Length: 435
Image (tube, rainbow, N blue to C red; front, side, top):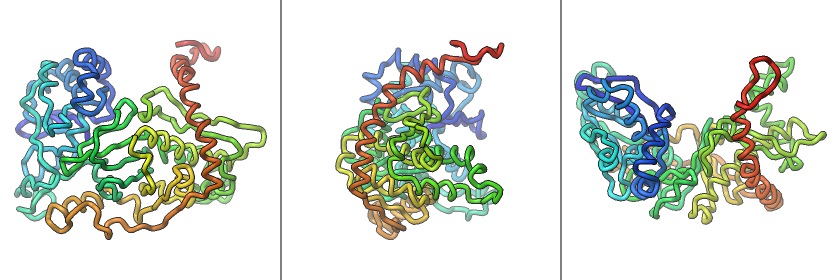
């Protein structure tokens, strides 16, 4: 989602520019100074930065004029390209379009007026279609390449965030889930006004074209535990060389008491996007003492991720009615993490069966509904629960007290993070010096 794929009449014209590409920061500043957040946010429901398409298209016009002039169609998602190759149609879905910063969220159309304000082309935008509408059929050339039968209907579908939302059981209002992959997010579907995007919440159009999907992203979620395993896995496995270092560190974390005797962890290894946007934020252990054990370090990391996800929850007004959350992604396989989330969130946590496969499940559900096999986005047999965790009142009280400390740490350290980012190593080897 949120990519720049330039096509001429023969195929791909230039290397794709991914959503995470930040080269257009100067152009993003130009977008904000020319149009302004006071107009952009009410129109698109989201903030504009270097990841958005307006900035990237300005960059292309400025530095890759030949691409800009030769392109016939602009595609904005990987599945747009796959659909084009399968059936020749150049189309995108409403949810993917709403990630771009080019979508009129209230009217479900391209906000061509933004392109006009910036003197950018308006003739190359892909057609907008519902994710449930068949966009074409597999053509002969694609059938020969893929082995798929010629004439097979092609449904465009949605990108990963929306497919995961459907597959995690949150395609209907009032259902929540946390995705715990290397990165992660908290999300739900609502029939309500957009959330404040300045708190890092993304407002995406629901595949039904009416509701919204609210997503609060976390740059590094289970990736924090992956960092632990890389740094300490060999140390803990020792001469035995135990292969399951994830399980070993998880078992050690279980041996530590909840709250880790006052040790807290900020999980911002690569900056953060919600509930604040700060690329300079970093990871921190806070409250180390002479008695701190390695087991407490490991558990503090798990707790810190849950605390950080709770700060995202607090940035979404409707989340105060949350009484159950589904946990999906590779991190849901942990025996300890789901219980930590239950105690930190103060609500029931359900781990879905095959939690890594919810994106595929959501895509299948979307096609199934489009074909008339399902009536809505909540068929019970799509979301089998593997296990359920309830909050333990004593642990919940402990975490509530620690959370009050946790949420004050980033504001207290913000200026120091930025000062640290300006410090560079002295080439002469004399230590550190201001950059």
